[in-house]
Image (cartoon, rainbow, N blue to C red; front, side):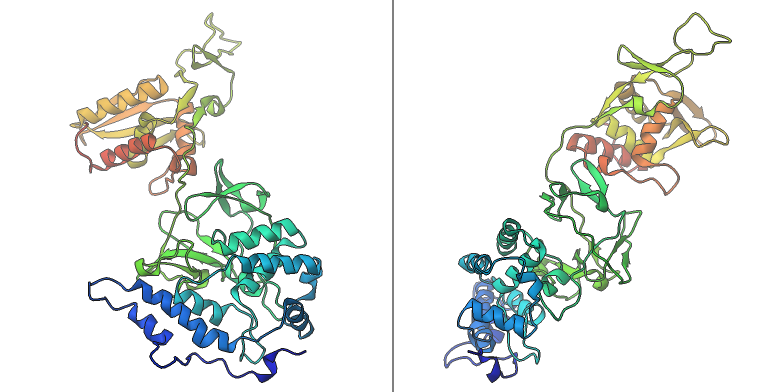
Length: 473
């Protein structure tokens, strides 16, 4: 028995309301009008979505008597890829569709329903009828991505319909379709992905790893797929980041914008009323702001082992301090440890003091290096000669963090004080955390994910160094 596609009529954007009913266009427009109490009529949006189905979707959807008839027809007519379905038993496929429909998904907004049926769902080749509902598209995406793994397919259906996971636009649009584009929405190798252990190159990730999501939570990687791609990549430079975002043109990017644009994805961080929308990378404008995620999950304070920064020579820990062993055989003295070497704490914990030091360094500090060498040999801070309280605060913080003193050199000409620690170890640590060079310093991800106490110190140092902070205390 053939489906009713043979009696297809053009898909029209307008439906017919019954006498006394308000059509979905009018209900959607009422969302922009305040009610008698001056409140936004959010209930009209839900009503518009409901009427959109009654007046338009249901009337323009091909009817099938059962799932077997539907799948057979879509495969025979080359709408669906048979290779996707052949990886599973028909019994499992039917159970997966039952699982999806049992969730009784309903679009919560008219815009979401309208976007799905105009942009994503499978239509007849002449564009006159709909062949899928949302649940059908979810199942075909899950079957495609799971590649024969029944447990993963079930999990993907649950995650997508419950709103915890939204595949990239090309994947959701094309998966399982015979006549399709490629479901590729990717980043190139070398792209850093943030994990609880810090950034990792995307190609080094494995199933089970946890990666930072746009909402600040860490999501578990289900699988890692390497996709061939012949598209030119889009490059998006964004403020505060040294490297641009490089990705395929269709990759969704969450932005804040003042433009009137539709969101590719409903929910999942999108809030068009307040300017937050998902856009394809190729559609991001120079006036938009990329939304950067910050981890909500607190991590333990990092403890830096400064033995990793000692450089050449023999060093050892004595009473918690790093000392350099005197290995000059020609002029060996009786002392075991080298005279003039600046001993420092071996272990330095993230703290307010370390944050304060780093803040001062970023705003008014630099690393000194030996002549014709890239090896750092000291860290320098410049403080106003009149800023006595700041000098004392920085010196005490340095002493507590590193157990070392800052030498003070006053410049009477420009009325500044240089506070210096000639320690290669400290300089190497600071260099690893923030880099060096005017306009070229960049805080590492380790720094940006530190706890509140450390970041409070960091901000204090930054503002004190720029002259925009109140007196100490």
